[in-house]
Amino acid sequence: MKKRKTILNLQSMKEKGEKASWITAYDFPMASFAEQADLDMILVGDSMGMVVMGYEGTVPVTMDDCISHCQAVRRGAPNTFCVGDMPFGSYQTSDEEAVRNAVRFLKEADMDAIKLEGGKRVLSRIRAISDAGIVVCGHIGLTPQSSGQQGGFKAQGRDVESARLLIEDALAIQEAGARFLLLEAVPPELTEFISNKLDIPVYSIGAGAPCDGQLIICGDMLGMFQAFTPKFVKKYANVAEVIINAMKEYVDDVKQVRFPEDKHVYHIKDSIEEFNTMFDEFR
Ligand code: KIV
Image (cartoon, rainbow, N blue to C red; front, side, top):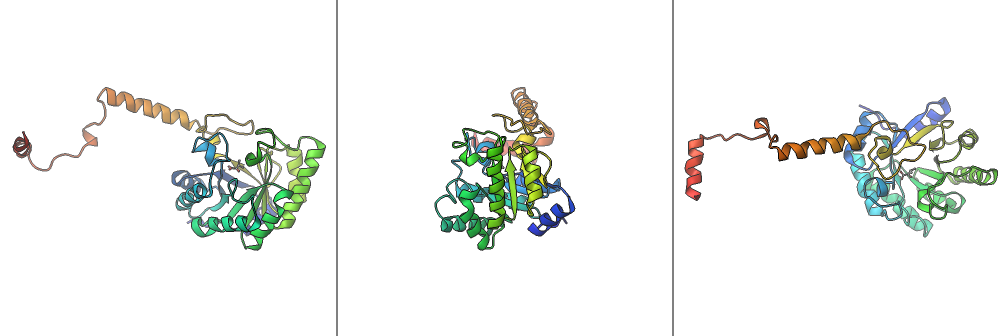
């Protein structure tokens, strides 16, 4: 049986130059597929808001949404390192509130770590959650929860000044106690610099190859999320097409009475004559 990785395994993978594979999942079947496919890590991202709930962004997602999806994912992937994503509003108000919510991910959903967005402005939250004994993942670059402030879902760190700020954020996040860091939508040159500079593992989503591993959103890579496809996504399948075609075939079968067939029904155990006699009682 697969053994669940720990943060020490992820750290030693960085030291050995072994890349980590990381995917999002939000429910039991996807988590179970990820575990069967031997992914190193799963993120129960607040991207669930867009991928499975149909919101335009991640802001409406609540703590209760996240906990319930994390629980389903843990049931599907009992032996995979799972990260719970702290939704908007769950860590913005105070360190105490942030710790209380981070604790829920471990106590109620058996997550291995939590992730929160932001750099220097969330340092005291990272420190407080780490001090509570919880493995924290930082997340900088494009940060969907603050995409309003960033002017939309836009790549970050493309000029020297904004790249400098991201390097300062990355160093501060490590210093505050985060055990790994996610860079989203920044240039690979910056990713390489940060990943070499930091001791903790640095992973990329849309931040190029030169770092310690990659994260991808399941709905994007499987072709299930239809609203838009970011430039950094590689589509490995077109599951939406497979599902729509299967459903169309089913509709056709129902209309043409090709389904169900004889093999899909439960046959009577007594004789048809006995059944007819019984039916007559009701006629
Ligand atoms: O929620 C999520 O899936 C994320 C990724 C966009 C990094 O935070």
